[in-house]
Length: 461
Picture 1 (tube, rainbow, N blue to C red):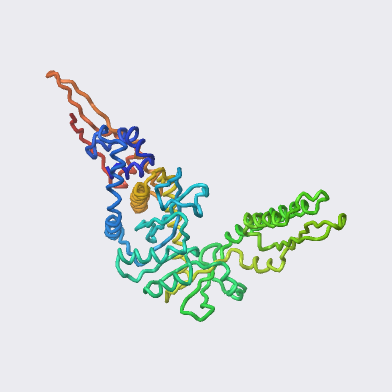
Picture 2 (cartoon, helix red, strand yellow; picture 1 turned 180 degrees about the vertical axis):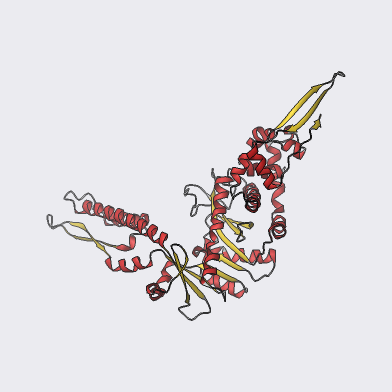
């Protein structure tokens, strides 16, 4: 039953009810697994979720061994990031379902946070589930400790983005003997202004320049300064768009305050509106200074009115233009050149792609299960399907078939099994089940994958 759950999630993500009543009976799984369609129902699938969940840690240890056997994967370098998935419903019985920062654009829904650890090849190794309102930076200490307990005290290198970084987390990694390669907050770029102005950049690939920099405080760390032309254009376009819109909104607010009708009289209301505008246009907020005061009304000396002053901070333009498209990496690794460090950090795109696969191809969101354990089991089934997906990607790449499992599955769905019925003189029908001959393009795919189809009919009752 666990196999049915995972294969259904891998091939055609849907609910347990849909699996039982529509999907399972139309597949070859009844023959392959020996479970008749009438023995598969939603209640049995739900019970399978309950039974599967306690095997989570044992499965993680199994994957570590199998990855090494199949792909020669080592685990001295791990990528770590967090995503969220939301629920439909109130989920009052799930204490982990909370409102927090939604990566799915659904702040109206309660959610869970999923912390995922993958190898540089993109193979998922383990995950942990946190409350939906848990901030990224508070999870690092716990996930590192969990990995150390489950997989030993190896001197691993952790690769994380800047949302995970704090001095406390880095000190914890140093104290445990681990290495790290992390992004840094953009505010730290100010300490490298001279290096940004220098011309000694190395081109690591078209449009991307990097250089090694010493730690500004003399610490035993190395910094990698990176600049991307594509990122420069993107950041400038977003910022200028927000700056124009924020300026228009502020001028509209000013017109309401200065209007003879005095449509806006309350100072606290005006200040809240400015705050909401700054929150909406966060990239442009620092380029404006807004002051709201109360002054005497010239037309009515006994009354007071609001006055607003909007000042553009032109002094920031030079620094912003210089720092556009730049980001900073920080590591305690020794003896590595800038190109290797940058290439390792860019491996985080693997984990971002893993999140995309989980959400769009494997349907991890939304979660409809009301119980806490059922929700966690749903995520485990999605994780197992993700392991299959990534393994198939590795297999396909090794066979020269690209890295698009969904397209391959669509081709494999063309394979059909047929029942041949032959009456006999004895009055008994002989029923033979056989597999249809694949089209040429499908035969080529199967040959490259080394998957021969059965060519002998099988007698069935």
